[in-house]
Image 1 (cartoon, rainbow, N blue to C red):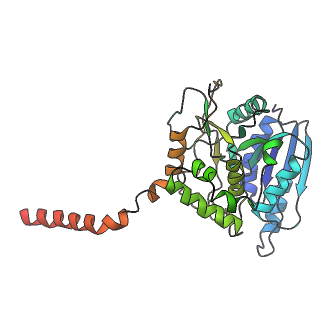
Image 2: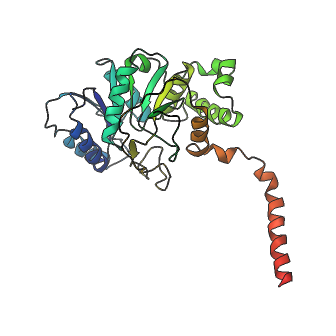
Image 3: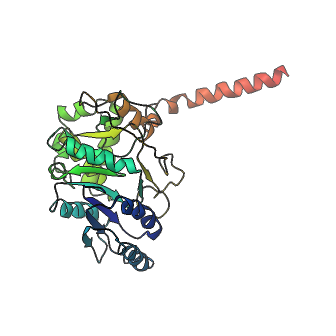
Length: 315
């Protein structure tokens, strides 16, 4: 049984809900907080699908305090998740958080619960993630390392950290011009990438709670405990997803594995090499590192055709 409360976020995908809820059932949390968005007016199937999801969630067959926060109309991703988590942390001081498309390995719950206890009073640590995008590269000599990236496909946090969340990131305009921002994003390519995203968040051009959460964590220099093995798989990639529509993405349906007995790192600090790898590979930053590709493309093309013509002439 999982001692920590689980916050479970659902919407209109019965198939995904059936799979992820079965994982939660095996953990039998003593407290379960269910956050559900309502059907969209312009989507005729939503009414039926939202009802089907909520019917699945009636099947709680273990001793459990169940709290339900169901919206009867559609709030949208950002408002539904942020208001739902505000509600959760009005009741508890810590929680493990899963969305309907996140399939967690059993070790994820043990990992999260242990670290929720261990870093409860350590203000340097803002979150615990179940995600690992290092493609098999083990960072450090412990079971996990610290990152600045608060990945949220299966994660955990405390009320003290969530209280720092600012959905409209009001601090951005001033912070983006500060030395603190430059220090936090020393890589110019990465800085421009996130500057563009955070600007869109502030201008309300993107319906995301995760980006404001990232900005809020960074603004307070928060760290995220990151396992050296991937513990949660996102099965939600596809056309019916809000942001993860590319079902062929390398981040879709990633394998999960056993983390085993936890070994804790001796030093609490960002693993810069791991974060650089995450930006280059998970956020495709490496494709932005070579703007000269546009300049050298004609030269490479000429060299390519020159070799082809030379080979033909030789033959």
